[in-house]
Image (cartoon, rainbow, N blue to C red; front, top):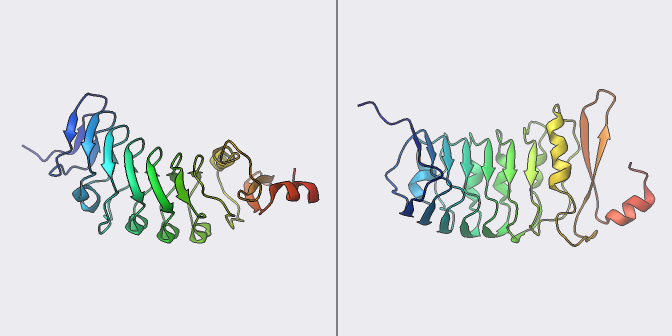
Length: 221
């Protein structure tokens, strides 16, 4: 029998711990009732490229391991994960999509996230314990990041981002940052203004620290 390429057990009622012996190119174990920790072997394996574990009841911290160079899509959203985001996550050299939303993570975004070269989408939504600022390294001109969601976190400050993007998809950046919380605090959060260029490519500027003052002093719209 040829080796198993993809395993899809999503949208069932499986429970218990996830067997750490699973090693396939794509594993979709999302939307079940799996408990226990995220197997460390999953994040260090050179087998996985797509790993979807969202919408389960996984707990504990994200394993600190030597990052895999093959993982492209990692979704751990809507579990009960705690602790900080390991700096090793920033070493996933092939990662394109990363979602850690709706957990109980704390601390700051690791500076190593500035090392990403392939990351396009980052979702940290509704992790109230996350604070600090977005790593300045993510402003690199060669970055391909098009979407980031930090709503429902305490991440503030300014993102020193000032470059032109080739895709209108980055307009979603504005919506994802909208007010960043239910209570508007202009001293904590930046104002994002979308400036349309003559070639119709959007450019994002972060004006901070006080959005109210910026609005009063500049006609940004």
